Amino acid sequence: MHSLKHHILILMVGSLVLLAASFLTGIGWYMKDRIVAGAILKAQTDLAICAEIIDKTYPGSWLVQDGSLYKGPAKISLNNNLVDHLSRLTGDTVTLFLFETRVATTVSGSNGERAIGTKVADNVAQTVLKNGQTYVGEAKVVEQWYQTGYVPLRAESGNIVGMLFVGISQAYEQEIITRYLTTMAELALALTILVALLSWFFLQKFIINPLHNIMLGTRDVATGHLTQKVKVSGAKEIEELEDAFNQMVEQIQSLTEEINDATISNSENDSIESSEATTELTVESTIDTEQEPPAKQDAPWCIGEEVLPKGLNQDTLDLIIQYLQATPRPLSAENVAEGVKLTRVTVRRYLEFLEQRGVLKSEQKYGTVGRPVKLFIPL
Image 1: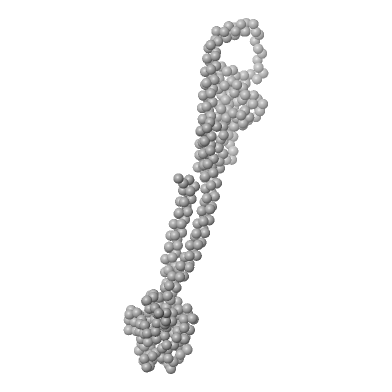
Image 2: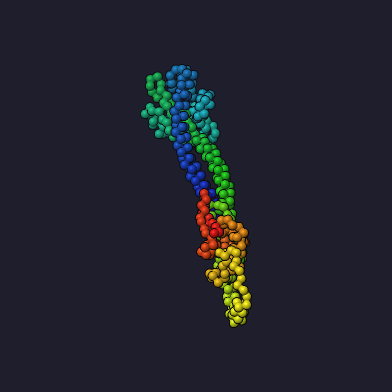
């Protein structure tokens, strides 16, 4: 069975991983659209650049002669140096067509050689060769998909004799996306690990350790050690749990003392009943023969056992009165409890009894934070 911190940590890390995966998926789709749009724009720009370079390098009109494509007097068919130069300048795949057939290209066929003599896709031929329009967009080039640009080549008469092509492979686009997403995934993983470590630290310090201390306190109670209170620091709920636990300990201590006092009282009553007749004779004889003792100096503090309410003990009362007389200043129940080595709950009961007898008075002392403290002041 997993501990609480493992459950919380698994939940938090799982949430972070799910969030990171969702973020990367969204970024991937967004990047794909942006890269495709950028590739199309690049194809358009490179198409214009290549056409201008060809016009300046080879002046003259496009024409077909002896089944080959010419630009002015220069033969373009099988002019691989031209397409290689344009490919190096733009970073694109470049092809020159005689009508729908490739006559100079950097595109490789399935055998790894230049795809000279292969045909253009039918939809491109329809748009460029028959309709005389520029084609920009996705197209299949020798069994591979590209973001492409095709422009018609016109002879001096205006007839279309071929096409100029530039293209960017989708494999290149995918490589860019993959590289970007890999970098983002590494950053997300590092962030997840960092958050997990910080979460582990805070869980351990502010939740797990305080709960562990309270658990040890409950074990002490179960084994009969009722004098040790729990001191923890953590979240508000943990501190409230600490207060509830300490109140429970005080109630158990009070109940235990009442049971002990009742047991002692019963024993004393049995002893008194067994010697009642003898005691009465002794008391009468003593009254007749002895002089009345002088009054004690501190009359308000003289409280006999006959006026004590049930559950209070004369010896304990005398101990508390001696401490109060030795420390004539406002004191809280906790101060007195520390001085006489008794529990705060027990001491409070005796102090409240003395207050009822008019020996003490009480007032609330308010601090800047926390609950007010009740102080007992000798009269």
